[in-house]
Image (cartoon, rainbow, N blue to C red; front, top):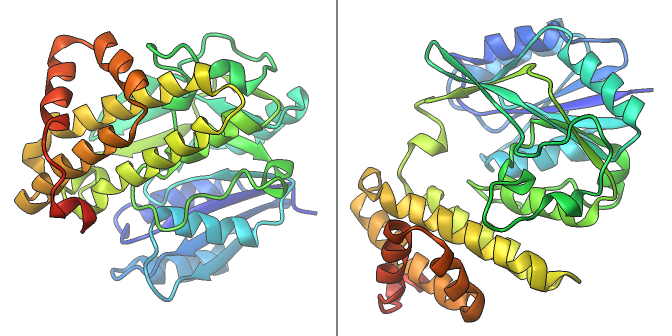
Length: 325
């Protein structure tokens, strides 16, 4: 019986995939499976994964006939997973030796639906620890209680799917799949749904997953239209949270976070292609017009002057044809 399924999408990461696969080998156990999803890579990644299918204990190779993006690739892995527990890793990140065995022992000991963990961010040779923004550690809690307060960073703002481990009952309850086709911010509706609908979780102070930043092929580094999927992602967060039984308490947090992300992208608009920048402004204006206006007003009033002014300027833009495009 498979105890742990690790879902690892790969797309054009031939430079980094060998490190990722070596770290999986250093985490292998006879009851672990590693589901390697080739998301129709066009570089040398497929050949690397073919070798891994032969050489990595527990490897299961799955190929997409066309590129679907990270959310779709993770869903493919979830559909193939057979483990009692599940987790994720990106194809350009890596793990400390024995990390999964330690993480699995911790979640089994706690007996909760899911755990969230800190991670090490790696930019070139620099290393920094990024912590789950939740103070209590090694204590089982209600995940709904970790969504608020609205004006501070909380566990739903730490959206990395690979920074944790999840019991299979969450998959059976329909809580682990991602919104198909989202090219960026795919973790946002996912983490909000987990915190609203799962029953128990805990935060652990473990530092065994290494997140590689500054990769040239990463969507966070590319200013094309795929970046604008964050609007579809956060529209979903707003829509689902508006239907929640605690919507009056939770919606201000969702709206404020959405506004903060819009402001972030507008503040870095020079990295977008000109046509995409215009579309970003128009889509952001339309998004703010869709939000509950009383909640939006309170969110803008609570922000610092620079961010609020930037958002109010964009909100006054007329909704043009680009929004419908």
